[in-house]
Image (cartoon, rainbow, N blue to C red):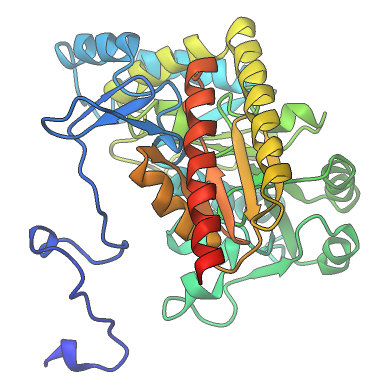
Length: 415
């Protein structure tokens, strides 16, 4: 059968020849970098770097080629790579205790990505009720414009039609309500509800933090109805908001937390963290991962936690975010016809644009000035710089972004 002739199959003619053997699931990338150092990426043979203000989508929390991470990775690579979970990994045992302690929870399951951490949590919330004689409690409430990864459970939990089309049926035991809308959430709770999953700060949806009164009320609803609260901190956790976990700003204790991205500083690792009461349901045979919690990932993630879980480091993140946010709000004032508002927490920042599609065009202009930023929903520019940025990088980014806005404004005026 000639599948390429099927009318629902999109053409991939814009993909470069060098990528023909890769699935065409991403927009054709324009640049290839061969080296990274601190907050900068470099192309082959070029000495001028690109200021990286999205850090592999919040993954490179400590920048590129951080010397301490390079050292610990090289040391571990010379000792032991993989043994599977049939044998003990002492680094993982120690890291689990640290993460559980920071989160105010008890146990950790290590995987390789954020969406795996989410999948583990989704399974656990349902299994918890099953083991307590409530098998009918198998529905999970998610919120609109969320993002929980691209696995089956992740796309079901987020419910984005663009991501679920052609992959899932009409009802996979998930319900969806508006974000930060407590009455809608309360109305969605039934005798079949097992739990609720929320990003503490929505990322792909446009950088929207949960309101404090909302998140606290969600916790109260969960306690009232005997259901579980899972917070997805894959993007907003690991120091990005000025605290190790974003939920620490709210005074709310979740039952389950999904963590990843910055946790490995560039090395793939994910963690599902839960209370003992909930994780008691995950007994031998209920879940697993061949690579999850391996020696390499545990060594690197442990060093990341050593560096980030530090009061002085967190104070630096707060100082940098205050400076960057002030500069960005000044740009909103200077370009009121282009920029609407700045929002977010810490160094997870969104700048909503006004003209339709402006975020994509400004992103392209910024790239011509060697500034790498990305975008999110609601016509938003998304800034996720390494947590190690200082005054120099902030001023440089603001100058490059301002130049890009001037150019975009000129294009608007000439159209």
